[in-house]
Length: 228
Image 1 (cartoon, rainbow, N blue to C red):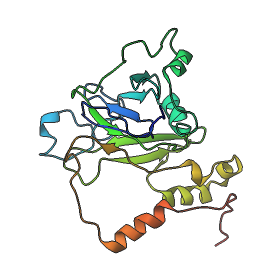
Image 2 (cartoon, rainbow, N blue to C red; image 1 turned 60 degrees about the vertical axis):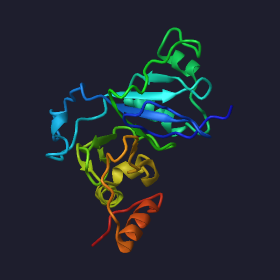
Image 3 (cartoon, helix red, strand yellow; image 1 turned 180 degrees about the horizontal axis):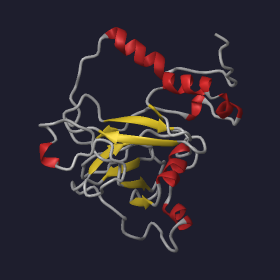
């Protein structure tokens, strides 16, 4: 059977697979993240006071053969798997790298039972450059989008868009000299599986065009600071 494409989910009981490998990140409300960026302790008040929720608590990937979910031990390993998921579909035996014994005959590590927030991730997102960190902050239910992506540079600077990263690299050409490229950054946001979790907003054609241009932004392989 052919594997399906990678994706990300939120609160759904049926991890169906069409024609590609699905890759999931699970948000567990019981996990309290150490980073104090806009914590959201009370899940009951999500719709009353839209704020940013804590970070993702669990990473999982679906086996391309048996379609069972396997827990991924770290964000770094998850990002490594996600980057190459199309050319190298995940299978249960891959987990032998961090587990002594696992196969498709074993029960799934986790199931979509409605107790967690699930979101479908995008496939083939590049791993962050060495020393950089990619973070997803989930917004409360009823927000205009599921979450926000930002990158933290080795100097501790948080960057929330491709233009911001481009400006930062112009000011810090030493990272470009180390091989950092714009193609290593992606602000693609996962899609929640929970119906109506995100509030639908009609986008103005000009705004949609601007978003399209940002998604297709490219930068030369070498960057030099401007003289002006």
